[in-house]
Length: 288
Ligand code: NAD
Image 1 (tube, protein in one colour):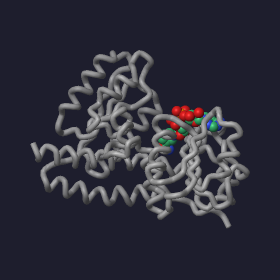
Image 2: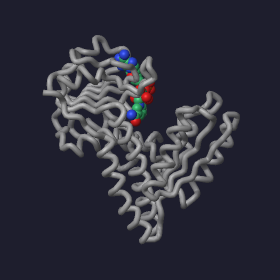
Image 3: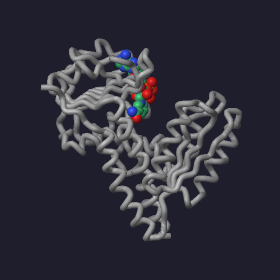
Image 4: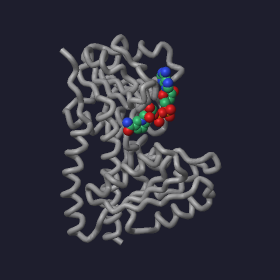
């Protein structure tokens, strides 16, 4: 019997539907959630991600602003723009599309964003809040993975979760989220040898290495839940994950497709973080 496919696209669509009525009720209370996106340069992938984010906002009724800079913009100008948006009360969520050109420090830019508006969850204050299990913002991809598992009622407590990848935006926050939900977590990376020794032990395997067909059927336990975060271009130009889908789906219990799995969940979690930011800021303003 093959694996059940986890339809991230459908789960995300349902979440967006629910958000529309939530946003309506915010509007009745006199405020509209707002997201600002800063884009530097003309990297085609970044342009396409940013366009998607603005389109998603429009679809659910979130106010959005796109601020575009030429690739030659100075770090100072970007930091000044962030200050303006930090002070703008129509904007509750603010992100700078990464990567940035080499002359602009990503860490300086991330740390200039008000932690209360940091809907990407990249600010060290929000990372620290995640580490210490406090309320903050969590990076959208790992948050989307948890949301997806909740949507299909997969228990996480006590499960062995193996994560392949230790980046700041996917692997590490995913490890912390699962740990906070009482999973036993193993984090693998490019120096882990042999990788399959660990992946075979996973009840839940999260593949986030950015390496096509890294995970084969031999690398997993029968019935495992396989979450494929990878987004790679195959030789034929097709979007593929890190998991050899056709063979792994015969052995796994659940599996996410690429595209249509983690990607749409990442997108919808940015909207969710923006709503949460708006609610928190509205509440705080009411108390002042
Ligand atoms: P990254 O390059 O920052 O990190 C990759 C991690 O994988 C590193 O920790 C590295 O040590 C590890 N790794 C690489 N090759 C490995 C191997 N052969 N064996 C074991 N570990 C290995 O990448 P990232 O930003 O975390 O993204 C990972 C992948 O997920 C990429 O394909 C990216 O495009 C994709 N991604 C998808 C979404 C989405 O919404 N679906 C969001 C973010 C990233």
